[in-house]
View 1 (spheres, helix red, strand yellow):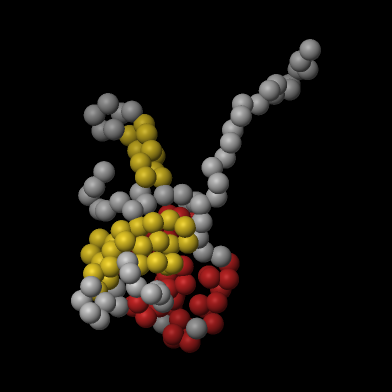
View 2 (cartoon, rainbow, N blue to C red; view 1 turned 30 degrees about the vertical axis):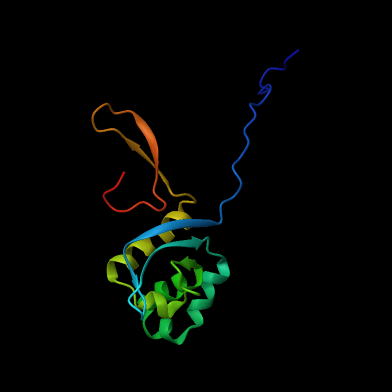
Length: 139
């Protein structure tokens, strides 16, 4: 017998495992000292420590705009075949790639995913698209 107000059996909702790293492709690419272009990389989710430690950095205190450079240098885990990625790598990126990475950081950390709900402009059907690793203008 079912009691009034009880939800009854719940459907089996298995959650996806928590993704902590997300792949991306830079619009232009980072050019290293040898002239090699690096476009494919990965960024991990930021921790509270990642966001707090750069606030102690003298470069950030002198110029708050430098915060995103230091922060991205901490959370980008891989870029092409570079042995490591750090704030010096990020500060030598093209402005369009920096803007892309700042937006990507916001997507995975603030929104929690890299999917966006969209609607077809012709039939108005709703669906989700994956933004991670996509290039501007591609679907």
